[in-house]
Image (tube, rainbow, N blue to C red; front, side, top):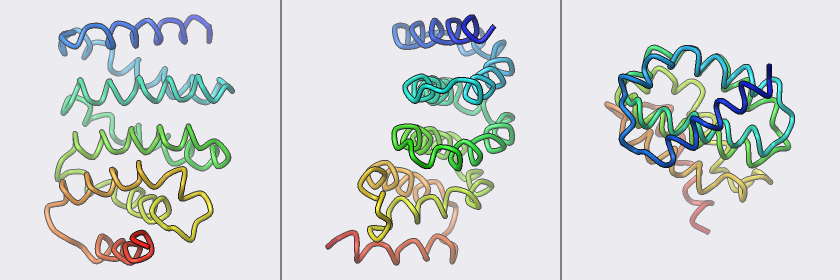
Length: 171
């Protein structure tokens, strides 16, 4: 069952990579089972490369479906923090998660403030040069920060706190 689901999702990835004009209406029919299957597989597979490929596929889906993905944000945000926490030693997976979140923030626009509770601490962590892992995450973390700043309807104290990382980052 896992092999069949994984093969199906990888076929979908190949289709999306080749055909940028795949109809949103066609993809919308599969959105619910797609989101559920991706996160189910992420919890079942052990290979880091496979998890990264699944997250890449999720990122493409978010980009293609744009605002149609919004009803699935609570589901995504149910799984993403857990996946982040369980992949502490897997930088490629964490970078893929940051990329998914960047696409999600861009897609959500001003509504992305609803996920600031998770992404702002993540931005702080990924852009903190005192963090020994910052070299793995800083580029993607800065992109997430840029998207978050661009999409925020106004600057909050929590967003302003991120700027304490800038002086160290510039050294």
